[in-house]
Image (cartoon, rainbow, N blue to C red; front, side):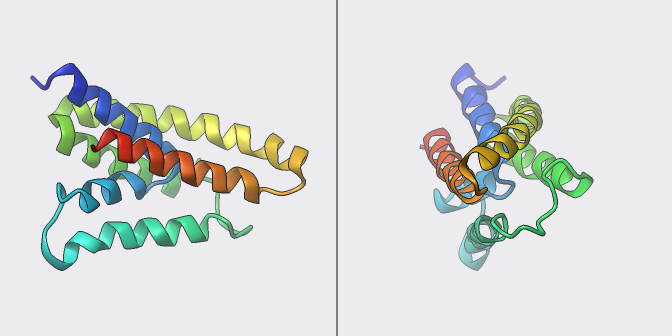
Length: 136
């Protein structure tokens, strides 16, 4: 059974994954905990692409089936690396909740600010910071 701190770290990765699908595996990869060799840079490259693509107005909602599936797989697998099956479950559950909260928060924020860009950039920064904290 993993200790509480490992499960908490997995749950934190779920928060990051609810905001950005590829950030949890990318954080693990950068820390050398996911893959070695050239594959080590696939997850960070995917995360960088997502950070850019998220700003495009035609990007579909994170609440669409592909967005949900990506968050379950990305966060769940990262949580598994940190804390086994309990970590996978914690990360996936937290990612789903975070995805819902953030999707609902961004629209009113965009309306208030006149643009979605500030909220998207803030979400990027928070996601990366939380993943860095979770994988330290």
